[in-house]
Length: 114
Length: 119
Image (cartoon, rainbow over all chains, first blue to last red; front, side):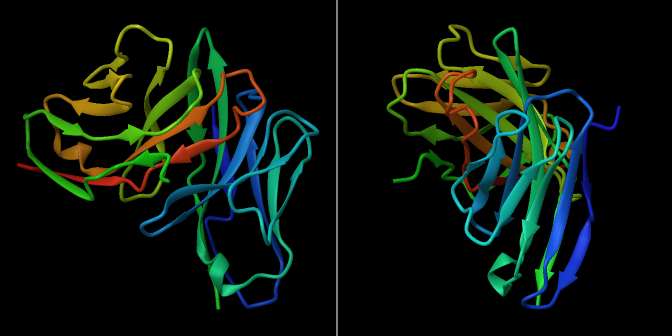
């Protein structure tokens, strides 16, 4: 059981380049999320998807797009990378069972934009 | 205003001692959830414990317990019998709204507390 899998783990982009961060979960969770983690800022929600076919903006959506391809996959796209998008990105999925909510994170993608 | 506040940037504890990591939150919702995560130096985020706003008892999970004081809006994490492997960054987070409601996507995190366990 792999849980939440993110690729790639590391990436360096030049300003203006585009890329897609991939995320997949094999736990049959409806909800999936993308966060970014910056020093001293905690984690901030970029986009989330409550279920297949739906996506919503989080706290810091500017400069990103997402796609919920199916229940398993939720990708994050940077169309034109900027140095301000240098960060560690986490994908997560969440489920509530019998009143208890559990959330699971991928291992993170360390992105540097130069 | 900060929705989640962790006032301790860093904490130190002796191995086998207990430690409390503070977390206060701000919400006007009646239904919400509180989470604690551990992030070791390897970077992954590990879910530790969850407390729902309507749960009458404090959540416990092994050596972790959540000291939930609703009136004070605090959700402190207590780690008993600290181990060297507990050294990590710890994040408190809140989900506003009911678990099945439309706001259940928005999980807000605090800035984290770095815990160092000394032998």
